[in-house]
Every structure is written in structure tokens, then in C-alpha cells.
Image (cartoon, rainbow, N blue to C red; front, top):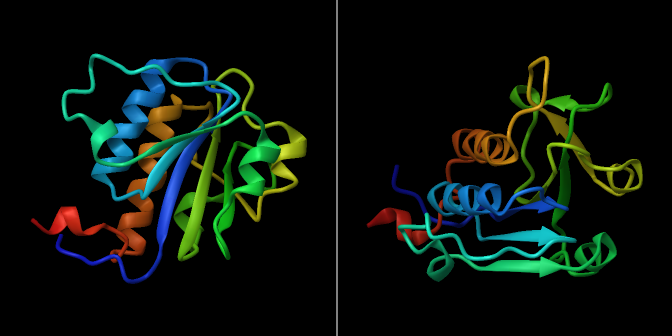
Length: 159
């Protein structure tokens, strides 16, 4: 799919991620599926030897010490989208992705706490009877975005 990034951008990150491997896998998916950057909140990432495409050299990773640090640095007119299994979350297949979005995933064990969910502009969920691995969930969300908003892929995907 050849596209230009004329309709916005997205980023994706993990709140207090459990394992570094998940961040590394999400980073690679974010690069492949056109995210502008990835981030962590509350837990730093250490480089993975499994990153054979050197994703770190293609899209940036930012670290925010706290959730407040993240919200203070969200780009202008960008929407925070929490990804969490809650009763009032909207199913991903019914969700209209904002042009400028930051997707926030919780760790598999704890998810996103209530005080974080309350600050999200939207909360979405993937159907199923249990939570998925955070990297898998993030990849599904980014894939859904690309299929619904096909102009989000950055120029490096045009080559």
C-alpha cells in the first residue's frame, strides 16, 4: 500500500510494561504499521538483541516517568486512546480512529488504572474473553488504524 502521511499520525505506548520483549515487539510493529513514535510510561526499555531491523534507528522511543509527564507532552490536538477491557469501552471494529492519536496500552497484569482511563478521550477494546499480550494488542490496534485510515503510513513505506 503506497500512501503519504497527509491525514495525521499516531503513536503507541505502554503504561508500566511488564517485559522488555513486549516493548521490542511493539516497537517493530509500530514501525511496520506506520506509527510516528512509541513510548513507555513508568518503566524504561532496554535494547533487545532480537531487534534485527534496528527499529531504534527508524522511529523514536520516548520514556515518560509518570502518566502526568505523558499528558503534559501530548502533541497539540492529539487524542489519547486507552486500550483496555472495560464494560464501557468501544469495540475496536466500531471505532473511528482520530486523525492524531496516541494509543496507550496497560501491562498484561494490571491494565490501565481508573485514574488513567478517566483522562483518556476514548477507551477501546478488542473482542475476546481474556486479555492478549500487549505487543499483540498494540499490533492489532495499529493494523485496524491502517485499514480504516490508509493515509497514515509515513513516506518510508512508499519505497
